Image (cartoon, rainbow, N blue to C red):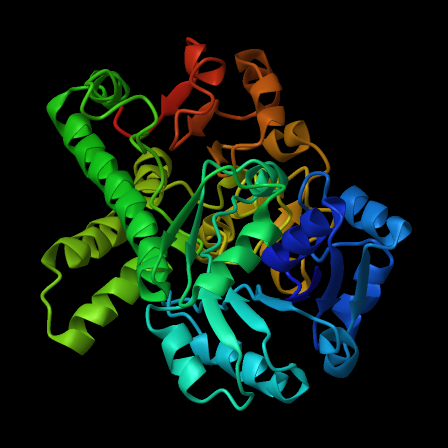
Length: 427
């Protein structure tokens, strides 16, 4: 089966590499020649464990190639898998037109009978609207919402719990079944619109869970309870279960969950359907975004020019992207407050130019802690668990740590002279 994967950022690169590994003949298409050049050299646009090696293996085996030419990429394609990572702005608004315009820009090169399979993050109704203006006869549209997780994307693609697919024609089910046969033991078939809505529903449910436990954690702090103990009580309830998203910590950020909450609120506006629960999730999460800053203010008080160590800058561990990183936002705020910000991250080789006047870079975590008055654990890199209370005593002026997610509770949280602050933990 000849497949063109169109849109080569995180989702597209993982999709193309895994399909090629499974023996599919894959062409990766992106209109950015610079991205294509890097991929032809086996370099993905962002770090994902194992991805560069998998890209290299596909290129060497001849099952994978890349191009910026739509005519070259689409001449033999039976399936176009649309995998753009939909841009999201600072207000968590998705640039859906970005995806729509790029798909329509290559339509003239698509053969009749081609299946357009959409996995980009788009609102319900996107495929229907695209189909209505599609200029090529006898093409069909399907939706399989992406379900990858940064840092674990290859494992998730290769061994999914299940894959959600929305189709219109029985023949498309056969084609998608063949395409996904090496990966999916279980496919949840539904309509295209239901598949699009399922993506929104999953992320909105996770966002609701995150917001619920964080709001509860703030109540725990005020009432003298321990949110981690309450979490244990919740998870041990059979109607909730041990895998629920119920760890007190930071507000959800980065655009993923927020984007789908916003999609659903916008659907409510469009169809005149009230969404008070989702609007409450949005408001509560916005409130919780200030938690770390409140702890900083309480710990630093009126101290002038304090040195604050920020451990981790990336959006999450296992990736190198700083896009929509709450850690970067925190660094900017600390700098504006008058703090000297010193940061470390094992996946960031060099700071972007726009951050070099904001952040002092440290090559090691201990270097970031040297002379610091406060440390903030911002990204849960496993390497930071090697830090001990003795390291804080030796390197920091004052051994004070803000750890929103309790990630270092078993290490730094045990230091008798360490001021250790975590979400939902009463002072």
